[in-house]
Length: 436
Image (cartoon, rainbow, N blue to C red; front, side, top):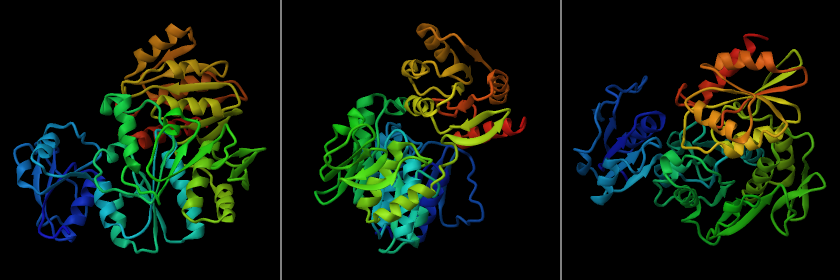
């Protein structure tokens, strides 16, 4: 399929490196491009791969039969637009991996909960099929997985909106859009564009395929996939689908598991149940998987209890809706740490969600003034602004009373101060444990 094909791979982070190596193995004529002047190939020898570094590829784009871009490169980039005008296909890593994937795929997207649901579904399905693998926008790039797979495997993939921008034939047998709230508008420009991109996860599905949708979210409830729709709801008992009844997770009238005692937000447990059922897992495996699940790092991750104050790392809360869920999940008074990189976000609903729970807000990052302005407008005055996350932890520790919680749930991306949300969360945990 790719032998001797002239292919340009743009953006040489982890997924780009994986794509370049895979295409070289498949016999393609590979050129890689990055604005960086140098690429760290690790132990891999890139002999035979042409490297176009330190520049954009505008001047060479017409030389190729296919361009593959990393998720960090927008489809609005001039060289991408030029390639499309020349009729050159532009794919992302997920599209390439799908075309090479020999086994069924469960693909999960949405604004919030993707990583938790993907991880949970993977762990449940492993109880049913030991050959289940997890990848995509979480952990291992799909292109690192596909050459190790057979038709007996199952791939559970987290798929971001950035990856969905560049699909063509991508067609998972089971897909999910968990929810949709304002996010990534710095990339997608409008909410309409963002919804349209997320909806692409099911655009190539047929009537025999399944799409799992969040019923409690107006946007996802209104989506019209071509295949069978399965809803999940934490608020309403549905005629069909997965929902809560008398404290139990119920699928089409059949009890699957009791919600009490699970270390999972109800919406995530319900979505994972629906996806796992339609991927073939029996009710017993789903119940066991739900009970065994202890959560995912950086997603309301318990860090420590110090002087009877619990500390939680929710660094993955890179948008307002996810941060609101962290507040809603807490039963005790909160000292909240938030702020970060500005994704053109409106913080009104976040500040309104504080209610009586958030006793103090510690603000960091690029969005500081924007958050301050929102707080002042809405009459929330118990906030303080600091320069570093370490300072924020120190202030929170002084403010929190016994029985309270300190929650780091930024409602913003990390790129103003950190490499990614994982590094940000690790810095928070280190700061907490340094005073324990």
